[in-house]
Amino acid sequence: MVSPVLIRPALVILVTTAIICIVIAISRNGSNHSTPVPSAFQELPQNIDIALKQARFSEMKEGSVAWELVAEKVEYDKSGEIAHLTGGIGMDFFRSKTRGAVKVTADSGEYLINNKNITLRGKVHLLTEDGASFDTDSIDYTAAISQFKTADAVTFRQERLTLRATGMEMDVKDQQARFIKLVDATVAGVSIEGVKNR
Image 1 (cartoon, rainbow, N blue to C red):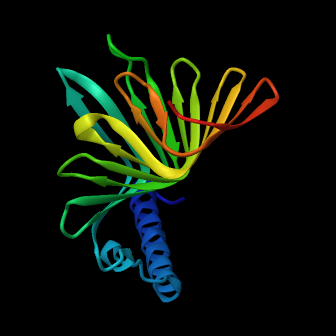
Image 2: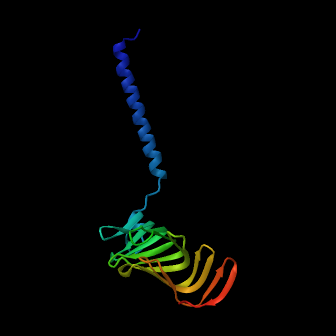
């Protein structure tokens, strides 16, 4: 009969040898078939210095957050002045004592870090708290005056009213929209052509 004193050391040697053999087999087979992982710097375009996922920007006014901007992907250019926003953008203007909330979505855009101006492009949709919505291809937000502006075609909807115009300005503070060029309107299915902006 084999002594119990000899069984333990024999098992330790056997298990250790098996672990070493497995590690050697994995390292030999794994290193021949693995592809090198590209560096993050190799994947960035030449003019981009940093790329982030799920980035968030905000602006403080009068001691509270005035707006918050979230983008799926952000790439900063080498100058550090422009953040290129892609992958879906959401911008929220929070309710304050003087105005209701505003939500804006778009496909892509640019955020100018120095002056906090924002350009949004691709399926831009703006929705106010009272149910007014604006759809356009691109819109610019000027932070100094809290104003949205576009020269593109705009479709405005609120309750039974639908307006189509070219060009629009909307102040975030009072949420009043001004349409620049000829407006066609539909009220509860009745078309009113050539409405002038007043």
